[in-house]
Image (cartoon, rainbow, N blue to C red; front, side, top):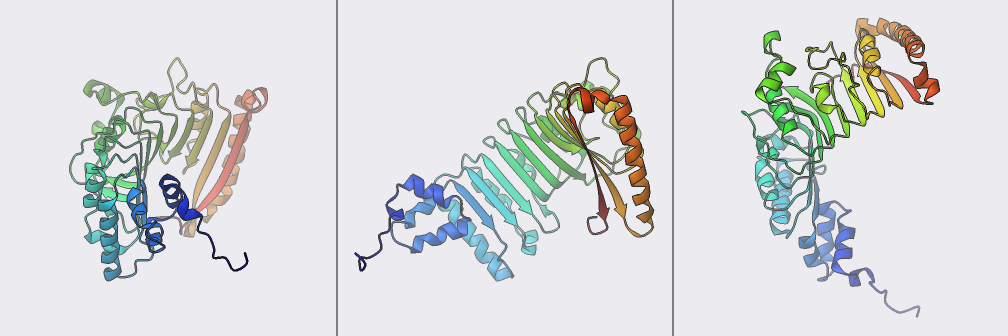
Length: 352
């Protein structure tokens, strides 16, 4: 028994189990298993989840070999349901990612994750015409060419982190082109300047043009406070708002209505950059009857002469806590609910 050869039990497992194991590996590593034996050679074609990362790409020749590898795998795979691309090489600025997106569209892809880490990789708006997608996550990308059309009827999760769009109209098209959206993260930048006051997207204009719609399926939202009308997301249970300035259109995000805005809201997180937003917080809380957790992140820029803000930051938070407890004692005591008051400092290293 001591001299008996080792038994390869893994290779005798069914194909579906082996493919499940390989799906947890980066595709490049999964592909190398083809050298183990002939038994493993055809398995990579059966993988439904592909993940490509160019972290080992150091020069242009290596980048071209990486692209050929991605071409080989995507064209030879029978069925792709999940596709992750992590694009960190500077060579991506000369490469057209739309070719791979076109290949993905020939499969019933449900989960697409594209991360660009080199000065916002350009991308065409065809990424938003993907009827089979359920999850779409884009990071550090530019989609700023022309107007867009959206076809995402099944999309439930949409994360747009540091994505550049042409204008806010295009963002509205994306948002309202996802009728069953449940989870939204939007950190958007726009190529075109902020519109003049008479051109601001107001509730009246949106209603008249049909652009204002309720998003009834939304459960989780993380977004800038001036991006979406509050009434469009009033059904959410978890809401994270970044409040960088005064709301530009009080008609959009007005709290002065008879019924509560956020009936289902359980957790509210506010990220505030300035000191004059405490009144907004008080108004929001008046329309969140079922809130259980409130988190407040106060961001202070620490750079050069702005060091003095640290002192006033502490003072302002103490004053707010006093006002909050005085006006809303039941939130802390009667309903045994929780208040988290978090202060963190944004140094010059964090500023993009």
